[in-house]
Length: 116
Length: 138
Image 1 (cartoon, chains in turn red, purple):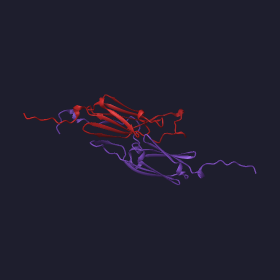
Image 2: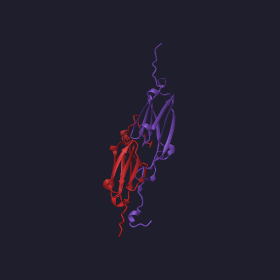
Image 3: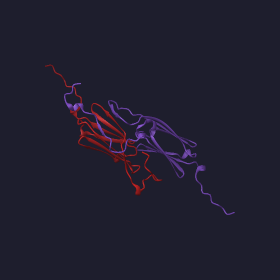
Image 4: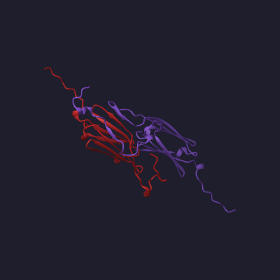
């Protein structure tokens, strides 16, 4: 991530603006009720993070706020059992956590057995 | 296990690995985490560490003479009730030491953390700063 040339004051020279896109490292966790995607996006404030759901693909895009030349982007194809309407995300300390709840249909449920 | 619906046999998340440049090695290799850059700018040195996930209290910074040391730890654990499926984020316990070209004024060192990026500004010690010498007529 340190390959971009910076000027003395840390900003990008206007004449040579080249934004580079990086693939952030992620962890994915699964519980009985949801999936979590945790991504490292250092230098990005919460208001510059976008999470977009389209069909069965979630796309994370994050632009660095401390320097204009770096974007993080990654797409995930998620299982159809994810309830997209209940998805949420929060960013803190340069990481973003995306919550992808499983639809009620896909969650484990004990079915009571009555005496016949 | 007997699968009643094929849906339950879902293949896990598939990744689009072509969205950008490859994952930076420093971001995923514990031995090189966090990525740190040290630059010199006039009368100060600036140390920048990319340490997403760490808060203000997770860093220990010390300065002695011309040496600055940054240490800390990032634990990457599955939350309660969750099982890991993909693990790329580095878990690291680090202590990095940099010997600067000159001594620094330890009292004037300032550190700030914003969105996982730590910036430490280290003013050079007075005797190490550039000085312009006026030539006097004799």
